Length: 435
Image (cartoon, rainbow, N blue to C red):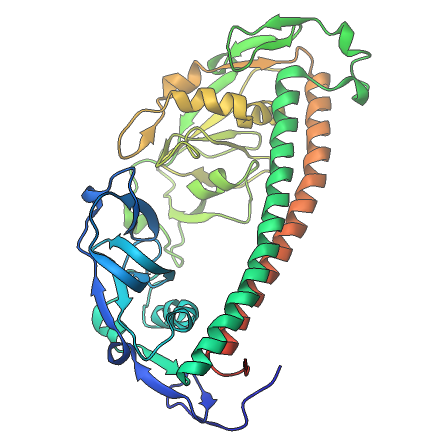
């Protein structure tokens, strides 16, 4: 990659040296920055103009407040300080989204690329917390922007459009490939926990010899005749997570009464609990709190959406003095000849997840009642040997698929980082782009 012939100090630490003929301008000197006029209540499900609510896009119908070219940045919320769209046309903007427009000295795409790779990381430095709460207008107006000549901006924008499109295409293909493997993984689980092992696995001599019966549930359909039907409460009991805790009880690193607890995200993101991902909570000796045990199942009893509601995860290792998050329930199996790993696979299958999600109630949050989980119906092979064979089969298949998915994820991460580095190096003058 070529570099420019001569450089000069930018006067800004994070920019360092810049090409001799580039200049540094404040955002307010080269554009108009304004917030939108719409609020969340204005949202409609259908329409023809993009209307932005923080970092999420929905549609707004019939009217528009802006017609032209603009770059949109979240002022607060999930995507705060992240430059997430460059638009040309008619659209609405949320009142907590900044609209950067009217930049005659700038190529819109160049400015978009520059802000996209620099605003968030620089604003983050000025916030003492681990996440940015909001992007203040005075700070944003003063944000420094590097400007080469207009023709150089156009050349850079065209170059990045081409290069990022090629990288994005590779990421898209890898993502599609990953989604197919994820679908295969779900299919294997769904089929095996409802129908048993395929005959090719040798546990059953012939599929023709497997007698089936109607489960009585439309989504489940036929199941092996020798599998037994149970309610969850026939297999064990539910127990509560942490209770009576205030915000000050958490994350006190120096407190001698600190204990580990399993956070909501550990259950949501993992089929089996990751012992390396724990929160800290103060628990005194005289408190009546439920400790977790190996082979316990955990349920998310409250969630903002259906993806998390009723999600289960298995604790497959011993943990000492460890507790469960408040929004979760633990389930301890007491019935003999029921393998926790098999039950966990069945509860995580799409078929059984769908039935569990139907029981969710609520408006701002979805909630599951304990009695719904207790009365939930499951189907268990009548021998521990068959359950173990199914678990072994799924573990082996999933391990192979997970290895592939990890490899794909690593490739995507490398491409994503390459994309970020390329953009940043080009828009800050570290790499020279010519026509």
